[in-house]
Length: 90
Ligand code: SF4
Figure 1 (cartoon, helix red, strand yellow):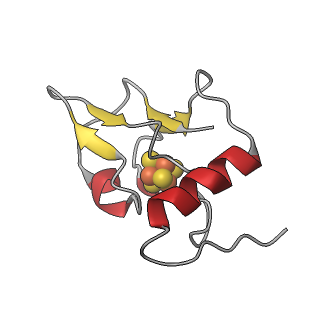
Figure 2 (cartoon, helix red, strand yellow; figure 1 turned 60 degrees about the vertical axis):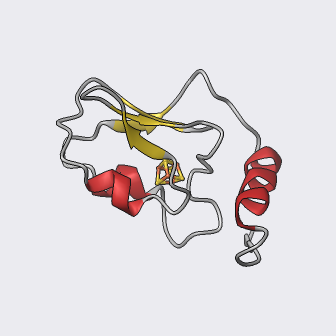
């Protein structure tokens, strides 16, 4: 599922620079994640980068955007198809 930014966000901007998919942007003093671009960092090293770096734990899985592993993988491949191949190990 995509991640979301909760109201605990302090707008420190740290997550925006960490996202490999440019899924995070600022909207009227609130940072938001575009679920169409969030892949949970699938194919990247480690866990979701935004959640890892957030100092107030404001990046959380979005219960409104459930996606299967296959759907996330298809999204990651679509977003990065021209840049590189996405590999996922089981
Ligand atoms: Fe971006 Fe990864 Fe956070 Fe999704 S989980 S918004 S892809 S940094």
